[in-house]
Image (cartoon, rainbow, N blue to C red; front, side):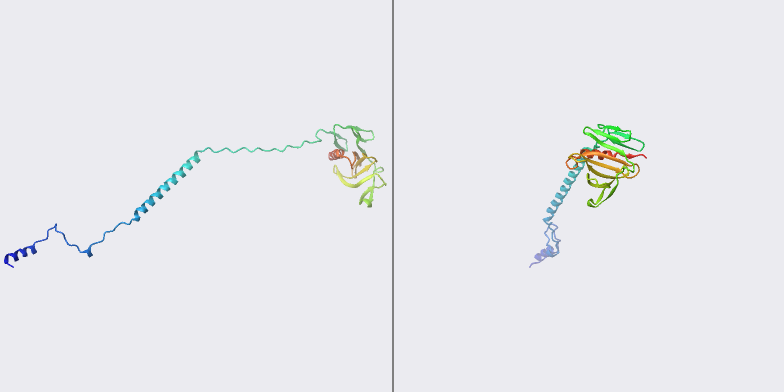
Length: 231
């Protein structure tokens, strides 16, 4: 190699490298470039969908609440109140009899008569319906044990007694109740005798116990229910 060639080579070695010249890179020292995962785009879409659904749900609920507040409140349907009708008193128009010992009511369509012996008779269209008589101790009917009827019978053997003698209360007075018949189909009588205070014999014609419809028995019971003793 000539002297000139050695000088040229020495200059090339000592000359600094050009900034534009490509530089060799050590592959080991270079950091790898991160590639974003493909799933990140999908997760962003999912979050967006959730947000949209929440907004729609909120708008729907808000619209429901606004509509509920603005809707007119229905007025309650009035409930009809049923007022029970009082049954008419069948004795409201009846006549009232009173003396210094007792009082009672009787139908105003019946005829009333008070006799000098203080016997009271009440008559309807078929005849005498009710007789009230004050008794003395002598003519007051007495009773005795009646074994065949397991109750009381009249002390005098009376073949016309029907049914048992019962203890009842009339106008707060203890009384006896029994039935007599004078024979025939429609000749039965219901008799009440008080056994304390004033002694009364109250006898009512009731037709037939066996074949009657109970009309006169019911009227007699209503009259007895109005009895009040004033002594």
